[in-house]
Image (tube, rainbow, N blue to C red; front, side):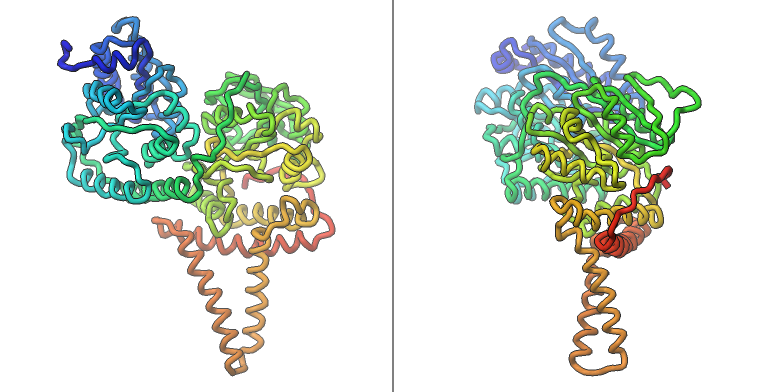
Length: 609
């Protein structure tokens, strides 16, 4: 107790076990080294084994370099019972993702989650172990409302915290007084079990984590904290508040309505890591392909090769990568034929398909391959999210696909954070399939493009009896076509082939949702003709017809306008126009496909414009 703190309960609970301290870091610069040393000095006094796991979440201010330098000299400054294991994430992906990455890198039987800015003093940690010992709890959370807490906090933050606390108690019902304070102590098994079921990556991460753990029987208690917010007076941005509310209500829906967290599947551990062959079909080299290859170099899962299939052999050697890379020229053939060539050359147990105009999240492979521990699962797909760096018109095209009135129940294809589910149809821009399943079905059918991935999934699910699982964490960032021309050309091809597949592949395509745009267009045209034909007539029936037509079209315009809302008026307008244009053009092309005797399957050498 030389430091004035009583570590007795901490020493009893740890009793030779290791404490892992996971610290998410974002743009803290050189101050992170001082913060880490403060934590280490505090833990040194405890007399137990510990490890620091600082996680840099794609900082752009030198934080990663400061963490690396601190870790290099750590062992010379601290006892042999301590270690520092940094995790450096290439691209910012949110606090939740950083904490998951830190947990995976940690090894301790007890895990402390502590914000890297140290607004919360680590010296209160003994109180957390005291609470754990007193209540027999699995989780101890720091609470600003604990009677022993010392809190220096701006009034607007206090107000926001109080309002959010009231909302949490109302909709979720957690028996705690605080969820958002960034200091929490977990038994490892409890934390791992909850993290495996999580969907939120950003603002409501803490709430979802605690809701899952408590719902699965974990006992939760609270401990006091010291918070020194200092001179920081950052206002809560409207977008932050909006997304926080959205995530909180989504947690309520999954927790209380769907009972999702209790039922969600967690795959068993892999007996051995499968080797993955990543196959990329493309016309030629492009800056987007270069971006895709760079994204693969940042993968946390390293047991993979990459096979790129351009039309022609490159004139100069492609840049060397830190993974095995093969380039196979195929001539001017369709994507299905290119992918089949990739399957034939693949050495992997799993073949991962990604488009050349998409780039993977750093944990794409890591998050997806774990499902292949279950032999019943034949394929895994994940969302293709619009990259934040896309131009205005491309982002507008992405928002059209994400719109609930365009994609309906299929929005999960374009948005992360959706629930895991089994599906029977998924696009090849983000699809991983067992190699033996692909060989059993002879790969892709080559008589259709687009739509070849629909037939592939039908063969996997209905032909081979394998499951196709959607995982919201297995993300790629898929560049969108610009509104309006390129977007509508792509959508028109999809609509035509979906209409044709109603006859060709009804198991995956004969669904009411695919018919809705065509029914809308039919009603729009027939109603307009009827109103025009009765323009010179009068009477109750004619008036009812007119009111019905203009009422329905007015309601449609209002509904699509509200569903397209964006804070940026220009983005709102473009999304609204894009939604209506997409409905009309998809509906027309769907009918064309439905009536067609044969679907065209031409080679298109350039499809990024």
